Image (cartoon, rainbow over all chains, first blue to last red; front, side):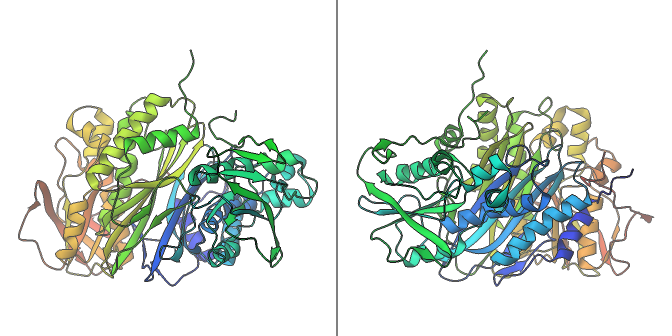
Length: 303
Length: 303
């Protein structure tokens, strides 16, 4: 049986045919040595890269190609949301293995481009190569009014700590492989609207929950030089507290505000106050009076 | 024997300790969800990504870690040069295998950062993960006066075709493994000064020679809708014409000018007129009256 396998040029042609989108500032997209972007006046640009690797971030036996495409982009967009930025353009580097035939690549691209269209972010370029295992690296660029990018480092004692959505769903889904939790694991939703809203609300700091609430809040506290006292965590239906605290891939936002919100949701997205920022040894955290250890996902420590 | 292997945080700390550099527009570097860049007025930004993969772009048995670090960045900088852009910042994603101990990672970073310092490009962020084989993805951003980015698509009939340096050195070095050609293969020099100069000279099109002159000039001709008639090629000492035409990794610039240059070098870098752009079937090329076939490196066709 002959594998249907495209040349490098034809993979690029297929991407272009599917439609890579446009945006105001994108002067030149796929096809030259570089993409060209014309920044808007009075705007800062924010940039993130995220790897998405076979057998590290997904398994091809368990995850559909469409989900892999979706998550590749969602990881980058979630970082933009955490900075309060709006999507401007993205680049995608792909290392394709022999097992990835045209049908798999098509489904991957469809999952990627469907989310890109919904988020209004054009695919402006990237790179292609071959490798034994599939690897993707997403580069996402966002725009934010000059000087207003949300950082991890602005939280102050007395601030109220909020989290969007419910936590532990992705970890539960990875374990159960079924239902709403599994769907949550396969297609996390980057909280872009909330990220922009946070600037309006005067949020002092924000981070996205990609490696577990405990580890990511710990990072925010370290960067801000503060401690955190938590009361409780909104759990995804069926998820354990351990999954909510230490599970990865939820892609909700944790943020701090100088005053509590008068609303408990943004549209359909619940917003829950989970505690307060306090002075103390930077990075220390407690939950319900018990010390909370910042365990979570470290690529170099997890076996 | 215990492998000396750092955690994700300590790898990042080592990078920061080594010094990641600064630039005027870089507001926030490594350490948050995104890097923050403030564009200069009247400047377009250009972006490229390039993968650098074990057993595809280098072999750890043959190539030093320092060379791998150098080439990872050089590939990105060469694309900036081809657009006539000056370096602004870069991001680096690394997938590190178990065999890469602290010493190897250190040497990789030293090779990378030495070139970064010389080119004046700060490392603003990136991502880290584990994978069986080493993989790097460089993201390079350059700045260019608004509307003046050099493209592949501007060559016109009658233009003079130039190439910088001498070709085939990297291919010869890969075959011989010794001498100046091997050094050329290990540490190619991105032609950033020449790239900026090309705008001053009114170059109509440019591309960097990463996959062989024949294939890359073919791409330029296709993008411009023109044909090329070549007289001769400057050969790296000892290189064959085949190596000069179809060998990869030279990272010289091919560019087109509406009038011939009155100089034959920029500093120490030779500039050679190799032929003329002509009307004709787009992408067709000849050398010394013989048809020149655009063979070269395609990641998906080379076994």
